[in-house]
Image 1 (cartoon, one colour):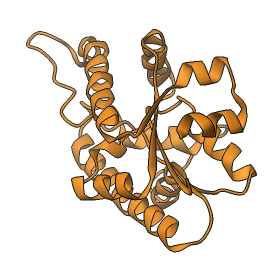
Image 2 (tube, rainbow, N blue to C red):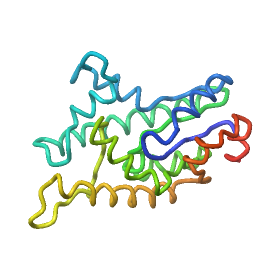
Image 3 (tube, one colour):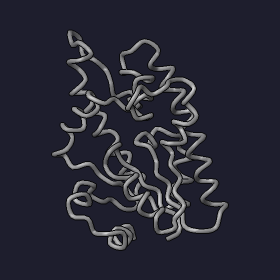
Image 4 (spheres, helix red, strand yellow):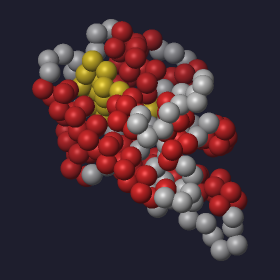
Length: 206
Protein backbone atom coordinates (compact mmCIF):
# COMPACT_ATOMS: atom_id res chain seq x y z
CA UNK A 1 0.00 0.00 0.00
CA UNK A 2 2.14 2.83 -1.34
CA UNK A 3 -0.52 5.43 -2.14
CA UNK A 4 -3.32 6.61 0.12
CA UNK A 5 -5.95 9.21 -0.73
CA UNK A 6 -7.77 10.67 2.28
CA UNK A 7 -11.22 12.14 1.66
CA UNK A 8 -13.95 13.58 3.89
CA UNK A 9 -15.29 16.85 5.21
CA UNK A 10 -13.01 19.61 6.42
CA UNK A 11 -11.98 19.22 10.06
CA UNK A 12 -12.50 15.46 10.29
CA UNK A 13 -8.80 14.58 10.58
CA UNK A 14 -7.42 14.12 7.07
CA UNK A 15 -4.51 16.50 7.59
CA UNK A 16 -3.84 15.11 11.08
CA UNK A 17 -3.24 11.63 9.72
CA UNK A 18 -1.46 12.83 6.59
CA UNK A 19 1.01 14.78 8.75
CA UNK A 20 1.61 11.76 10.97
CA UNK A 21 2.32 9.68 7.88
CA UNK A 22 4.75 12.34 6.62
CA UNK A 23 6.63 12.10 9.91
CA UNK A 24 7.08 8.40 9.13
CA UNK A 25 8.55 9.17 5.69
CA UNK A 26 5.46 9.27 3.51
CA UNK A 27 5.30 12.11 0.96
CA UNK A 28 2.31 14.30 1.80
CA UNK A 29 0.48 16.15 -0.97
CA UNK A 30 -1.43 18.98 0.75
CA UNK A 31 -4.13 19.94 -1.75
CA UNK A 32 -5.66 22.63 0.49
CA UNK A 33 -2.28 24.25 0.96
CA UNK A 34 -1.48 24.22 -2.76
CA UNK A 35 -4.83 25.77 -3.66
CA UNK A 36 -4.28 28.43 -1.00
CA UNK A 37 -0.86 29.23 -2.44
CA UNK A 38 -2.38 29.74 -5.89
CA UNK A 39 -5.10 32.01 -4.53
CA UNK A 40 -2.86 33.96 -2.18
CA UNK A 41 -2.73 36.96 -4.49
CA UNK A 42 -6.51 37.35 -4.23
CA UNK A 43 -6.82 37.82 -0.48
CA UNK A 44 -4.42 38.56 2.36
CA UNK A 45 -5.06 37.05 5.80
CA UNK A 46 -5.86 39.52 8.54
CA UNK A 47 -3.62 39.51 11.65
CA UNK A 48 -3.94 36.11 13.31
CA UNK A 49 -6.17 34.73 10.55
CA UNK A 50 -5.40 31.35 8.98
CA UNK A 51 -5.01 31.45 5.17
CA UNK A 52 -7.87 28.97 4.74
CA UNK A 53 -10.22 31.33 6.59
CA UNK A 54 -9.07 34.20 4.41
CA UNK A 55 -10.04 32.05 1.42
CA UNK A 56 -13.40 31.49 3.05
CA UNK A 57 -13.92 35.24 3.18
CA UNK A 58 -12.91 35.48 -0.47
CA UNK A 59 -15.34 32.80 -1.61
CA UNK A 60 -18.19 34.12 0.56
CA UNK A 61 -21.57 32.60 1.24
CA UNK A 62 -23.46 30.79 -1.54
CA UNK A 63 -25.85 33.73 -1.95
CA UNK A 64 -23.05 36.31 -2.17
CA UNK A 65 -22.75 38.27 -5.41
CA UNK A 66 -20.18 36.61 -7.65
CA UNK A 67 -20.08 33.41 -5.59
CA UNK A 68 -20.68 31.09 -8.57
CA UNK A 69 -17.70 32.51 -10.47
CA UNK A 70 -15.43 32.21 -7.43
CA UNK A 71 -16.62 28.65 -6.80
CA UNK A 72 -15.83 27.74 -10.41
CA UNK A 73 -12.37 29.30 -10.12
CA UNK A 74 -11.71 27.39 -6.91
CA UNK A 75 -12.77 24.08 -8.47
CA UNK A 76 -10.63 24.72 -11.52
CA UNK A 77 -7.60 25.17 -9.30
CA UNK A 78 -8.54 22.14 -7.24
CA UNK A 79 -8.67 20.02 -10.39
CA UNK A 80 -5.17 21.19 -11.39
CA UNK A 81 -3.71 20.71 -7.91
CA UNK A 82 -5.24 17.26 -7.36
CA UNK A 83 -4.14 16.03 -10.78
CA UNK A 84 -0.61 17.33 -10.16
CA UNK A 85 -0.54 15.57 -6.77
CA UNK A 86 -1.64 12.30 -8.34
CA UNK A 87 0.92 12.61 -11.13
CA UNK A 88 3.65 13.24 -8.56
CA UNK A 89 2.55 10.24 -6.50
CA UNK A 90 2.62 8.03 -9.57
CA UNK A 91 5.90 9.36 -10.89
CA UNK A 92 7.99 9.47 -7.72
CA UNK A 93 9.24 6.44 -5.76
CA UNK A 94 8.14 6.00 -2.17
CA UNK A 95 4.91 6.08 -0.21
CA UNK A 96 2.50 8.94 -0.88
CA UNK A 97 -0.60 10.30 0.82
CA UNK A 98 -2.95 12.70 -0.94
CA UNK A 99 -4.58 15.01 1.63
CA UNK A 100 -7.61 16.03 -0.42
CA UNK A 101 -10.02 18.87 0.15
CA UNK A 102 -13.60 18.29 1.22
CA UNK A 103 -14.79 19.23 -2.27
CA UNK A 104 -12.77 16.56 -4.12
CA UNK A 105 -16.05 14.80 -5.03
CA UNK A 106 -17.00 17.72 -7.30
CA UNK A 107 -14.04 17.11 -9.60
CA UNK A 108 -14.31 15.46 -13.00
CA UNK A 109 -15.28 11.81 -13.23
CA UNK A 110 -12.06 10.98 -15.09
CA UNK A 111 -9.87 12.36 -12.32
CA UNK A 112 -11.90 10.65 -9.60
CA UNK A 113 -11.61 7.35 -11.45
CA UNK A 114 -7.86 7.85 -11.72
CA UNK A 115 -7.60 8.53 -7.98
CA UNK A 116 -9.52 5.37 -7.18
CA UNK A 117 -7.45 3.32 -9.60
CA UNK A 118 -4.08 4.55 -8.34
CA UNK A 119 -4.73 4.96 -4.61
CA UNK A 120 -6.31 3.30 -1.63
CA UNK A 121 -9.13 5.83 -1.03
CA UNK A 122 -9.98 6.20 2.66
CA UNK A 123 -13.10 8.11 3.67
CA UNK A 124 -12.97 9.62 7.15
CA UNK A 125 -16.67 9.86 7.85
CA UNK A 126 -18.23 12.60 9.99
CA UNK A 127 -20.45 11.25 12.81
CA UNK A 128 -24.03 12.49 12.77
CA UNK A 129 -23.55 13.93 16.26
CA UNK A 130 -20.88 16.35 15.01
CA UNK A 131 -22.82 17.87 12.15
CA UNK A 132 -24.46 20.70 14.11
CA UNK A 133 -21.05 21.64 15.49
CA UNK A 134 -19.65 21.69 11.94
CA UNK A 135 -22.31 24.17 10.84
CA UNK A 136 -21.60 26.35 13.87
CA UNK A 137 -17.87 26.33 13.12
CA UNK A 138 -18.50 27.15 9.46
CA UNK A 139 -20.56 30.19 10.46
CA UNK A 140 -17.97 31.36 12.97
CA UNK A 141 -14.85 30.68 10.87
CA UNK A 142 -15.89 30.29 7.23
CA UNK A 143 -13.73 28.08 5.05
CA UNK A 144 -14.12 27.94 1.28
CA UNK A 145 -17.10 25.62 0.76
CA UNK A 146 -18.22 24.34 -2.64
CA UNK A 147 -22.00 24.09 -2.51
CA UNK A 148 -22.72 22.87 -6.03
CA UNK A 149 -26.51 22.52 -6.23
CA UNK A 150 -27.05 22.00 -2.51
CA UNK A 151 -28.03 25.57 -1.66
CA UNK A 152 -31.55 26.49 -2.79
CA UNK A 153 -33.72 28.71 -0.62
CA UNK A 154 -37.42 27.86 -0.52
CA UNK A 155 -40.03 30.53 -1.28
CA UNK A 156 -40.29 32.85 1.70
CA UNK A 157 -36.97 31.71 3.21
CA UNK A 158 -34.15 34.14 3.77
CA UNK A 159 -30.68 32.82 2.89
CA UNK A 160 -29.83 32.69 6.59
CA UNK A 161 -32.94 30.62 7.30
CA UNK A 162 -32.16 28.24 4.45
CA UNK A 163 -28.55 27.69 5.46
CA UNK A 164 -28.96 25.02 8.21
CA UNK A 165 -31.32 22.92 6.07
CA UNK A 166 -29.13 23.24 2.98
CA UNK A 167 -25.98 22.47 4.96
CA UNK A 168 -27.55 19.20 6.12
CA UNK A 169 -28.39 18.42 2.48
CA UNK A 170 -24.82 19.26 1.47
CA UNK A 171 -23.44 16.80 4.04
CA UNK A 172 -25.85 14.09 2.89
CA UNK A 173 -24.93 14.59 -0.76
CA UNK A 174 -21.22 14.54 -0.05
CA UNK A 175 -21.54 11.48 2.15
CA UNK A 176 -23.07 9.53 -0.74
CA UNK A 177 -20.31 10.69 -3.08
CA UNK A 178 -17.51 9.89 -0.64
CA UNK A 179 -18.97 6.42 -0.08
CA UNK A 180 -19.05 5.78 -3.84
CA UNK A 181 -15.39 6.83 -4.16
CA UNK A 182 -13.93 5.07 -1.11
CA UNK A 183 -12.28 1.68 -0.73
CA UNK A 184 -12.40 1.99 3.08
CA UNK A 185 -14.69 3.95 5.40
CA UNK A 186 -13.44 4.93 8.86
CA UNK A 187 -15.29 6.81 11.59
CA UNK A 188 -13.41 10.09 11.95
CA UNK A 189 -14.89 10.76 15.36
CA UNK A 190 -13.84 7.35 16.67
CA UNK A 191 -10.30 7.83 15.38
CA UNK A 192 -10.13 11.12 17.27
CA UNK A 193 -11.58 9.73 20.49
CA UNK A 194 -9.69 6.43 20.45
CA UNK A 195 -6.38 7.10 18.71
CA UNK A 196 -5.19 3.73 17.33
CA UNK A 197 -1.71 5.03 16.59
CA UNK A 198 -0.21 5.18 13.14
CA UNK A 199 0.17 1.43 12.75
CA UNK A 200 -3.41 0.92 13.88
CA UNK A 201 -4.58 3.56 11.40
CA UNK A 202 -2.71 1.89 8.55
CA UNK A 203 -4.08 -1.49 9.53
CA UNK A 204 -7.61 -0.10 9.30
CA UNK A 205 -6.84 1.43 5.93
CA UNK A 206 -5.88 -1.99 4.61
